[in-house]
Image: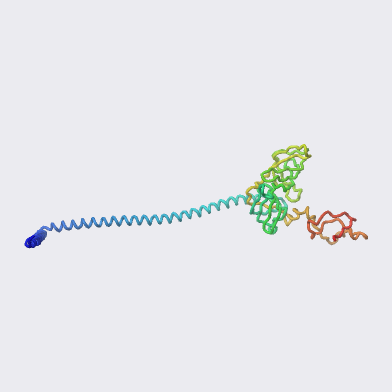
Length: 336
């Protein structure tokens, strides 16, 4: 292309521009076209930017909402767990309250008082040496050996051993348990012996002449001076005569539920009579001091300085050393 042609192109473009400018000054058509085109282009760009912004902000807001919802959900879950724990505790306390109310409904006989105790542990079954439970009371808090133990249904056993703050209760199903009982209707006396876990009790020393019917209630007779009289113990299951023994073979079932024990009730004599009542057969009667004006104690005759008079054992003597007192006139041998 020649230089003339190159110069002609800018000149033509300039003339076109000037012509269009002049024409636009008269008609303003190009201004309107440019304005509309610019606005439309700007609108498209701004709408695209706004759409992207709205999309990003919506996604961010949804993310933040999800985070808030998750945190709120976690808090609600923790609150549900707290309320569930409170509900379980309330249910447990309600069940314990019902059990304690049942224990409080028991009215002890005259001259006896009751004391609640919580079961700490239990030991039952073939591998256990004794059918027993451990309670949270000892001899410092009212649980002494021989103290009767009850449930709302009836007799559960008696205290076997006692420490300062805990004690072992021998349940009435243990083979070593012995309780003097009497039938409620026919008033037949006997001794109720434990048969072991998951086995019936045995009522012994009931002769063939006595009438004991199945279903009859057995209550404490009070003859052993350990249990109050009239406390329900068991119910007769069967009573059959025995050809090999002068006594009937009588089986009974305990009234107290001795499985899963949680609270028990100790029954003791008022004003400390629980100890004298439970060990009276071992320690013997208490010594009564002489009063003024009372008859003098009999003195040994001359020549019988070593003789002993019948009477209670010394209070300070251990119970395993006290035995039957020799009759008058027999000298006591001194121990080497």
